[in-house]
Length: 482
Image (cartoon, rainbow, N blue to C red; front, side, top):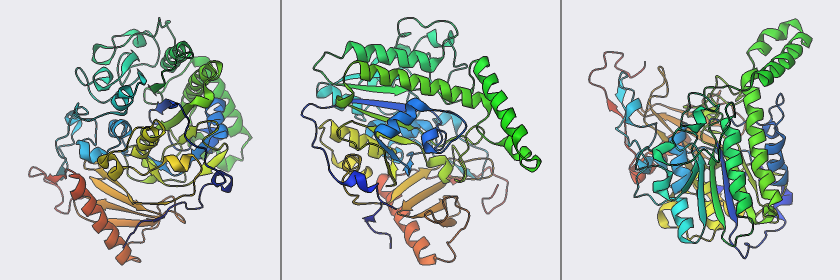
């Protein structure tokens, strides 16, 4: 049977475990830099070797990189809700982008979902505001329209960029009315300015203005990048295209076809540079305000990289999939004097763990519901020896694609099981030796597979996860395949 266990596969670097800094006497400022659709290997510090990301790499060098971090869901809105509430998306009735995108033509009907995060949920912003924090939202929201926007969930809205899924990443789109009728253009966005630059400038201005205040702040900066449309300034795209052409021309002839297809493509590479520059703008504002030591900065993504744009290898799959490529995300944490610098930690984590850690850092008590869904991650960030944790579970009752139906998954240490929610079929992988999930061990390890499947089923009952149901109008194969 799976059990609570030590989960540092190689543990955090030994240097991290030497000392644990005491909590700051004043609650720290909290800065969350949430990137849309950023894959686990899209950053140079995470292994990508074609695009420089110096500002983001600086976060990793000055803090901790968690190499086995996962999103709460393979799609963004559900993970964003988990970050703000600390609760699993299955408890919130969120898995997709809302009822408007239900897949109704397959063998199984997904459950009807909420189209917004319920107002009854207490967000991190609301908790921090009650303890004297200034709470600021900048950028995309994706958790509801009028009446359910960030201003309704505890934030002062500084700027939204005109909506959650822009038709373009360039102004004048950014100057449109904000999500849920709230927000500003950040003091004047210039035509042709990149949305990430406007978001970063808006955040930086508020950080500098708050430098002399005693009141701590929580900044939730949710970049529109790197979601489609993938675009960047033409000159930058051309520069990356030329560099790519040179690499391909210099390679042996037998490698060139594969190199032509290899990610990142020039436009994604240029967009990634834009993102990195925007992150640099925020970090410089923190440094210039003299508050780096008082500010805990987290950078992560809402789901794994889309395979059309990100190279997730050696992981399998991408965004919208319960394969590791759809779940694994970057997670960088910096808090000088508290989080040890230059550490890579391979403790498995999930989005709601980040909520709990931020909450604990601010001195906000952890309630029973969050404790049930989120691992106590702050001691790990502070360099404490890794302790045991429960398995991590995922629930995705929508069809993943035209050929893959609704699925659930569970990770217990090195072992990961994926279950087809329609047929009950399972696959089992040893992530320590097979991170690409290429060899199904369910037949070789039937007891382990059965035990994990039972734990996953019990977890679904405990959180009230809504399940797909057979589609009476489906005329396809009776076994549920597509």
